[in-house]
Amino acid sequence: MSVSLDAIGARLAAGGRLTDGEAEELATSHDLVSLGMLADEARARRHGRRTTFVRVFDVGIDAAGSISPDAVPTATGEIRLVGQPASVGDAVSAVRRVAAAAGGRPLSGFALDEVKTVARHSRISLEAIARHLRGAGLECIAEVPIDRLDDPAADVQAVVSGGLGAPRVTVTRMHEASRLSVLRRVSQLQRATGAIRVFAPLAREVNPAEPSTGYDDVKQVALARLLVDNIESIQVDWALYGPKLAQVALTFGADDVDSVSPADTLDLGVRRAPLEEILRNIRAASLEPVQRDGRFRAVAS
Image (cartoon, rainbow, N blue to C red; front, side, top):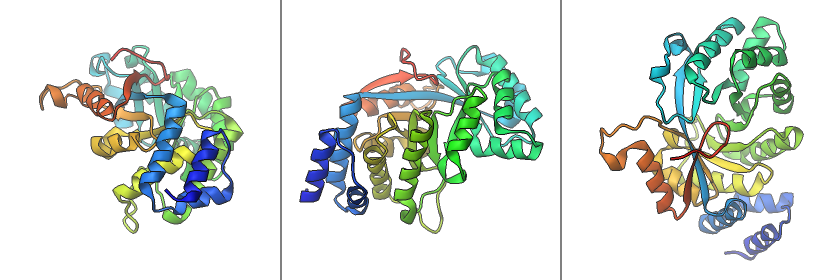
């Protein structure tokens, strides 16, 4: 480990904040092993060995009208309504129908930029549409895509004022040149709102002109843990990135796993059933798995 990374590690361990120069040093470092060690130590200071995961049942907006309580797996910890609604009425109707089938389970839905688009086209405020969605049974916005919002703090404050949570920040696409600026925007958003519980720093869409590598991905997770120090949890998406990358990410600063399937199918054998697989992967990383729900409460596995 270089002297500069040693000094950065000592500052973090003592509870200090990094300077802009130190952040640049981390972002440009090619010493992935040392960077991962720093991030893992930062995660351990916050969470010990505790690693949470949530089992999510996605419902497409087009299928919302036909959803029934029997269709929701018993192990579901969060129901997530996905897709772009055409209007306020469509969004409210979809939420109301899914909420009726949810059986009291936490219900999230939509990306914040999608809701903002509907509000603009319908000529109502973001706060007003949030109130409508909350009244229909939505608890929180499913994701706040930091790179698709011009003023994310104002948008988050608007939906929070309308009664919805906005606990999860995501990144749609990540460019190497914008890596630090994205992380800084996330940290600034939390300072302005205090609403964020988890940050998922890995891009949700592949940039064909600049595809990431496994090296890039775990480095991004580590930098997120080290530089976004005012958000409690760093998240990796199990369904999007797969068990292998998710497991490695847990040793590079991540402490929360999203989108584990709630369907306990045994089609591929007991060891490949979703619950057994996530438990096995977390324990194999020498961590303690804790299942949670969409309200961030621990539930029995």
